[in-house]
Image: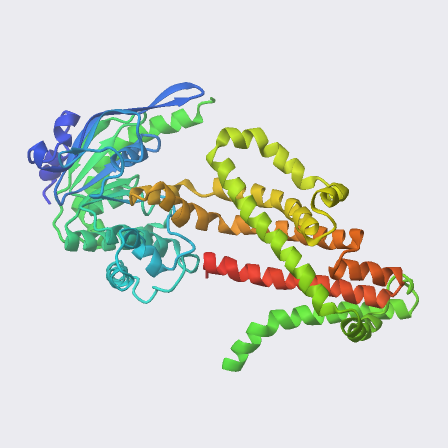
Length: 289
Length: 255
C-alpha cells in the first residue's frame, strides 16, 4: 500500500465524525451516542468513558484499542446489556439496548467455559437453553466446533484443553447462538503472541464465512490491525475516542499480513497515538493513592 | 498394554491396602514387643479373628443397617436443609450478615451434650438420634453452600446473562454446578459430624446400632470385638462417601 494512503487513512479528524461508519447511522448494526459511564469509588466518582459515539456497519469488523483503564471493557458490558447506570444511548439496529440483546453474542476476556461440561455440551449450551432437541443441538454444536478447529475434542473437558483451545470453545459456544453481532473483549489477552496470531487467522476465517458484524476490544495493536476494517483508538481515563483508523489491507487476510510493510506502518501510526495515552496510564498507576 | 493400563487403574487401591496392612503389621510388632500396652490396644490379628464372632453373635447386619439408616437420614436431612438455608442466606445478604457468625458458632457447638433435651422431646428412639445427627451436620453444609455460591466467578454469570437465561436457569445451569465441589465439601463434613453424633448417641443412650454394640463390647472389656465393631462404623463412612462421590460426579461431571 502506498504510504500516502496510510497517512490519509490515519489523518487526524474530529473523533465523532470519524467514528461513524461509512453509511447512514440508521444502517448501522451497532450504534452508540454520547455514552458516559461513571463509577463511585472511595476516592470519588471515576469517569470510565466520556461522550463516546460510534457506529459499526453490517458485516464490518471494528476494533477498539486503548491503554488499560480507558473503559474498553465498560463499553463491552454496556453494549452487551450487562451494565446500566450510564448516560447516552446504545442501539442494536434501531432498538435501544436494555439488557442482553438476542442479536448480540459475547466472548469474554476471562476463561468462561463451564468446567463441568465437555466441549460438545459447552458449545451446545445456548441451544439447550433455547429448547432445541438434543440430537439437533449436538449436530449444530459439532458444526461450530469444527469451525473453530476443535473437531475430535468434543468429549474433552475444559481442564484437558490449553488456554487457546478453551477460548475457541467459548467462541464456538457464542457462534452456536448465531448472533448477528459478535462482541469480543480481549478474547486472546491471556495467550502468547504466536497463539494469538494463529487464533486471529481462525477469527478471520470465521468472519469471512459468517460475515458477522464484529466488535473486538483489545490492547494488542497487531491483533487489531490484523483483524479490523476500522480501529477506534481510545484515550486514557476518561476514555474518549481519540481517532479512528480505517485499515485498508486486502481481504481475505491471514496472519502473514503482519510481515507486510503496510501492516508495519499501521502499527507504528497507532502506537504513536497510543504511546502518549499508555504513558499517562502508567504515570497514573505509579502515583501513590 | 491393556494389562499395564489395568494395573495402573488398580495401583492406588492396592497401594492403599498395602499401606494399611503394613501399618497393622508394624502395630502388631510393637504390641508383641511390649512397646504398646496390649490391655489398651488389642493385637490387629485378634481383631481380625474376632470379626467372625462379632458378625455371628452380635446381630451385626441389623445393627449395621440401623446405624447406616440413621446416619443416612441425618446426613440427607442436613444436606437438604443446609443447602436450602445456604441458598436463602446467599439470596438475602442482610440475613447472611445477621446470622452468618451464629451459623459458624453453631458448627463448633458440642450438640451431643444436649442429648437429654432431645430425649425429652423425641423419646428414646431413632428419631432422637437422627435429629441430633441432623443438627450436628447442618452448619458445615450451610457454610460451604454459602462459600461455594459466593466463589462462583462473575464471568460465568455474565455468560448466562448474555444468553438471556432466566434467574432460575442461572441458578440451576450455572451457579449450582459451579458451586457443587464446595457444597459437597460441606456435605462430606456434615456427614462426618452426623455419623459421629449418631454413633455417639447410640453409645450414650444405649439404643440399637453399632454405638450400642461398641458400648456393650467395651463394658465386657472385649477389646478385639470393640475394635472390630468400630471397623464397621468406618465401613459405614466408606459406603456413604462412595455413594456421595457418585452423586457428585453425576451432578458435576469432570475430566
